[in-house]
Amino acid sequence: MIRKFAQAASFALTALLTLPAAQADQLDDIRAKGEIVIGVLGTAEPYSFIDPQSRQLVGYEIDLGNEVAQALGVKPVFRQIAVAARIPSLQQGHVDILAAALARIPEREQQIDFSLPTFVTGQKVLVPHRTGLQHVAELDGRKVVTIKGGTQEDNIKAAVPGVTVVSFDSAPQAFLALQQGKAEGFVDDESGLIGVLSKAGPKAKDYVILPERVSTTTVGIGLRKDEPALRTAVNEALSALEQDGKAESLFFKWYGPETRHGFTQRDFRFEASQP
Image (cartoon, rainbow, N blue to C red; front, side, top):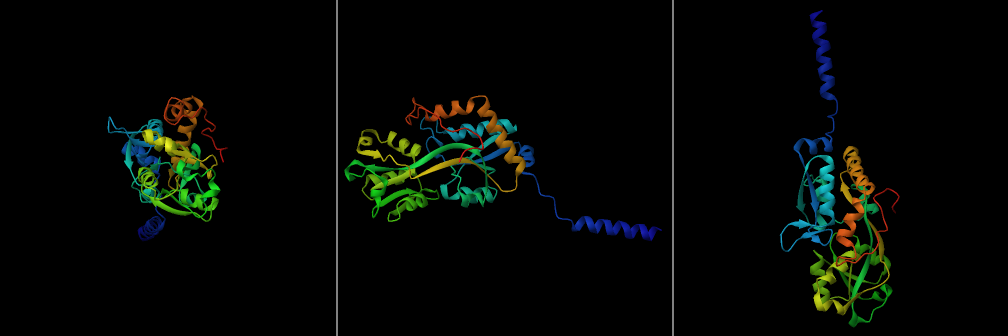
C-alpha cells in the first residue's frame, strides 16, 4: 500500500513538473512593483518634450501616462527612448507600455497590441516658400527629410513614388537639414510640423505646410502582445477620461487655440470606432 501511494505521488509530481509554466500576468506584476515604466520620446512636442524652464518631461502623452498610472494605482516612471527603439524596448521588457507618438499600422499590429486611439492626425509636408511647391505630388524627383523609425518614409513613398527620403533621429535635426537646403520638404505629423515652426521664430514665415495629407494616422498606447488584462485596464482608464471630459481638456491644453498648435476642434474620441 505504501509503495503504491509513493508511486502515485511520484506520478503526480512528475505530471506537475511537466506542465507548462503559467504565464505571468503583466498587470499583476506592475501592481506588485507599484510602478509602471512608460516609454516616451521626449523630443516630439507636444506629445512629450523637455520643458526648458523646469527641465522636466511634459506633454500630452505625459499627462495621459500619469492618468493611466493613477487609474492602475501605481507610480508612473517615464523613460526616454529613440523613435526606432520603441517596439524593441517594449518587447524586451525595458518599458511596460509605450506613450511615444506611436502610429497604429498593420506591421506594428503584428508585433504589439494597441490601446484605444489617443490621437488621430495626418502627416503633411513642410516646404520652404523658395521652392514654389504647392502640392505633395510636386515632390516627385525631389528629396525630403523625415524622422527615423516612424511611418513617414513609407507613407510619402506611397504617395510620391519618385521621392528620395533621408531620415534623421529627431525632428529638430530634420528641420535643420531642410533649413540648410539639403532637402525640399520635411514630412511629419501635422502637429509636429506646427510645433517645429513655432520654434523657428521670424524664420517661420519662410515655410509653409502643404494642404494635402500624405496619410491619416491613428496614434495609441503600445502594449505587449497577449496581455489582455493590462490592455483592458488601460482602455478602461482612457474610456473614463473620455466620459468625464478630461480627454478633451487634455487635448486642448496641448493642442488648442491658445497653444502654438492652434487646433480649434477635436475630431476624434478615445473609442474603438476610430479608423
